[in-house]
Length: 113
Length: 111
Image (cartoon, rainbow over all chains, first blue to last red; front, side):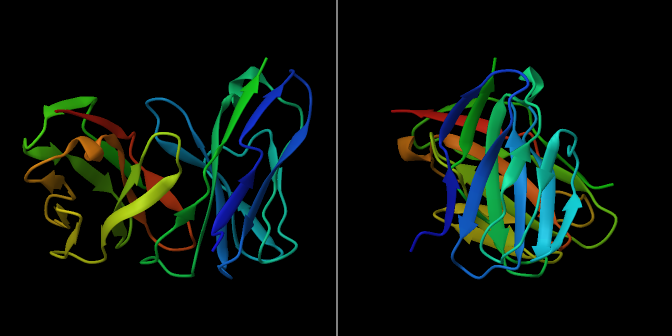
């Protein structure tokens, strides 16, 4: 039972480079989302999706793109990395509804130099 | 908009001490409330939840009660263990898969 799988676990980028953080879930969850975790700020929502083909912006979307072509996958693209994007990124998925538990991946620690 | 405020941390306790981590929220509707825990090097996992006013969530000796009148969801445990050392996040959801998190509280328990 894989749950939510994120790759890579660690990444170092140079300023201006682009990359894609991968996220896949095998629980047939409708909802998927991306958060970034920074010290003293908790987790902040970057983008989310309520189903295949539907995405929307969260609290801190600038510099990131997403797409959801399948139920299982929800990749996060950094278009031109900046040092301010140094963070730990978490992908989460859940069933529809406000009472449902979100399942998180193990995170990607990204450093932009 | 929605917001969640947790007590400032970190919190350091001796084993078997009583734990309280305060959490208050602001929401436009009727949210569900959650406590998530993050062990070192891992993702977040659900600790407990409450979905309506006066509900009490409980798990692994931890408890929290949904208090609508004080907009609070404080986490408590009567006797902490070293294995409880982790980061604890209070969060709310109004649906659509979006969670609003507090800042997180680092708990360290010493033998």
